[in-house]
Length: 114
Image (cartoon, rainbow, N blue to C red; front, side, top):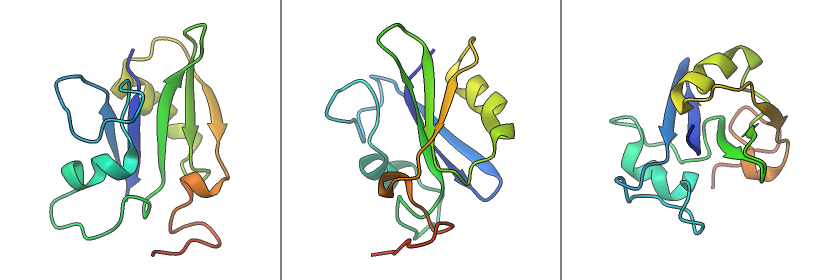
């Protein structure tokens, strides 16, 4: 079971479970990645889009060790099994669609590619 971040680029799920062996893009907590910091190191070859262009999300855990997925509302629930597999989740997670600016992407009203 790993924390980490993911993007949906076209129909492909780009998942990055946290590993202390990969030092790029580590969040302030030191226990996961920061989307913005990680993007330049992992974005698809030839991609010129910003980190916030594509729908994205993250896998976290509650204080009781229960998995939670926070993600952009444009990511379909049918991707949950693939996300679970990529992050080694053995328990079905709580899924929280995040409608805030934090997870906004090009598919959302009001998105501005700055």
